[in-house]
Structure formats: C-alpha cells, structure tokens
Image 1 (cartoon, rainbow, N blue to C red):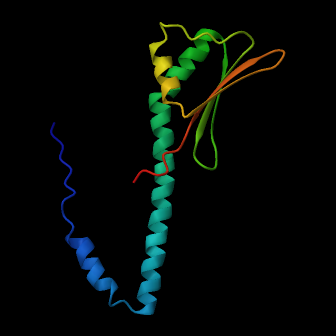
Image 2 (tube, rainbow, N blue to C red):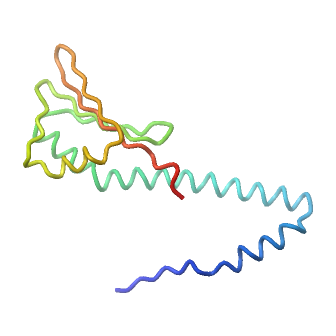
Length: 134
C-alpha cells in the first residue's frame, strides 16, 4: 500500500497573511484565541505522542529486563513531559552483552543515574521531552 503526504501547498498560509492585515480588533482577538487553543492542543498531543512512542518502543524492553533480573520497574512522566524509568533491585543490575535491546534503551537515555542504599540498587534512565522539535 502506497502512502503519500503532500506538504507543498502554502497558498492558505499566504492567504492568511493577507487577511491578517485587515482583521478588526474583535477578529484579531478571536484569531489569537483560536491560535492559542490550537497550540495548547498540539502541545498536549505532542506530549501524548512522546509517551505513546516510549510505551511502544522502550517499555516492553524495560519490562522484559525487569522480569529477567527480578527488579521493580517504575515509569513516570513529569510536568515537563520527561520520562523517567527506574529499575530497582535488591541485587546488582547486570546488563550483559546479550542484552542488545537494553543497550539501545540506555543509549537513548538523556541522563543516567545509579544510586544505592543498604538494601537496593536503582538505575534511573531519563528520556527528555523533545520540546525544541517542530
């Protein structure tokens, strides 16, 4: 099945620029409200898309690794939309050369933290929200 995505038509954008010059104050306010609403909706969708991507790409790998190592897995998306995945174990967390998919997950992390206390080891991987992409 062939798919095509055509983003070459810029006539509407050019037409809007011409119209924007002639908007009344009420029309300009309504246009600004509509633009702001659309931006907020798109930002929410972008955050959800990031979470959906993480859930499809990395969560199964992390869950499998947690099961393999007898660890707890905690996943959280904070207010800035960054995702933190933490593996907590009462023993060492050993990522061998056979764990190729786990190596990929670790490589994709923007920040890695390893902490210990008297009873647990915690490996935290933070995946930063790509907020500068358009």
